Length: 267
Image 1 (cartoon, one colour):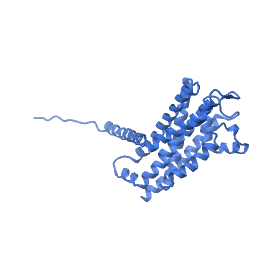
Image 2: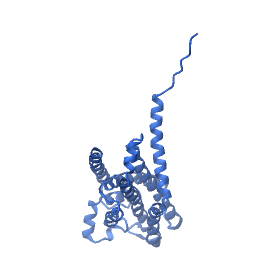
Image 3: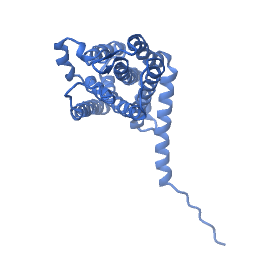
Image 4: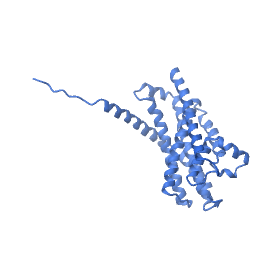
């Protein structure tokens, strides 16, 4: 009597399992950050509070063809998405590394890249959430008008900016002591935000500070965001801003990978 042979698909399941790991890790990373009120309320609340205080107070103010409320929407959108990336990854991952969380992940069957991918994708998700909330507040209470194309471009710049500053967050997480991480991030985040013109139109800043701004990666992100409304600095090149942001991202990713690989070899 012959017996029937049953075969089971294996190769397709392997790719599906790998994708499932990445999706689940990203889902739980996002939910973890969302449920951590000290993080979610601060990264959502601070840019919203500043925009309400300083942006909406300039409702209907137009200077030199620039709607100040709309200008500050772009600036505080960048401020918010950068904060989500630096605190969510830089501070959060620094704490997890000190508790040996990465070693535990490495000992499990989960690929380390899924851990890093989830961090970056969660930063993008929070960036989109922050920019969406600020835009809704600007339209509802600030008299800001946004076309569908402008909103789509804003979200595109948000994704690019979140990836860029997530790379900085990854690099900082490997270098900062856990206890000092929040303070060190603020020492980088707040002065650079001011110098890059995120809090006020850069033409109102002292001339010597205006010359420092192009050295800041946040400045180039802000100019890309403001270009959505046609409010970028006169004579500035969008290609130059994109090149500066991409170059900064690649530099941070390269520096992160060098330090991370060295830590992996010494582990």
